[in-house]
Length: 279
Image 1: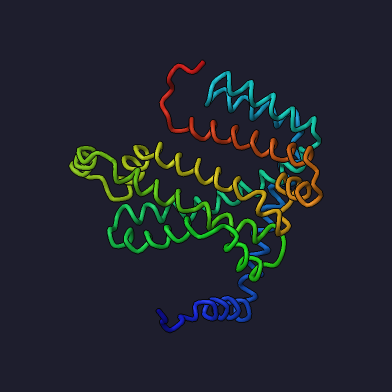
Image 2 (image 1 turned 45 degrees about the vertical axis):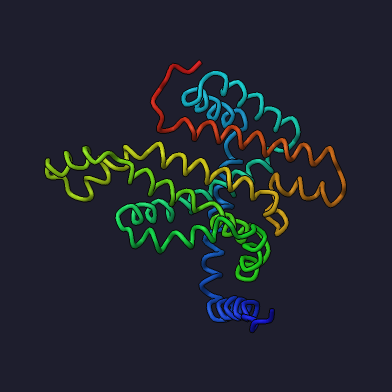
């Protein structure tokens, strides 16, 4: 069976080259903003004394996730220090936090919009499906074309990959607010803004925090892949170990990613939940 070939290859090349050639100042401005944000955040994290940083995270873990998680946190972070991976860890943290922040400031408003409009939800759904199912490496190609090698294309590709859960779970959480609560708030004369901020968002907080959690986890899953285009951090340690067949070094870098993932996962899972007698 022979059918005419659809020139998707040529169309994609044309769009990327057209945007790169005609909107170069726009991409440079985005690049400078994102790079400056990541570098300043990394500098801030490195400026905080290691002991103080560890104490802050341990206390946060104890308050939100319990004593057991606090013990794991202090052991895990001290292990990173002992492996001389602290600077790389802060680089990874800066990348992940930046990508998560951008994902949330875009994703949560879009999730609210989707919860208020069936039409908006139907329009967003195929884009979200596309963003979640497209192979990760495909995001890196146009990102590198637009922003060159470095931390910026890594952040942009990570944002595209990690944003859909924030949109979907914000939408889901707001739609699951009981009708009785909406009717009661309406009966008391709540404005749409009051309804959103005082009824819907507080009730949807567990679902929204699940979206935050998934954003962070997906961002961390991009760490090693992003190292291929110069992002550095713990992913850079793993990537260099792969290219040099250094098993021990690769295991240390991978263990660092696991430690950070577990700490951030448990802390963000605990936010928005009711206290339940943690031990």
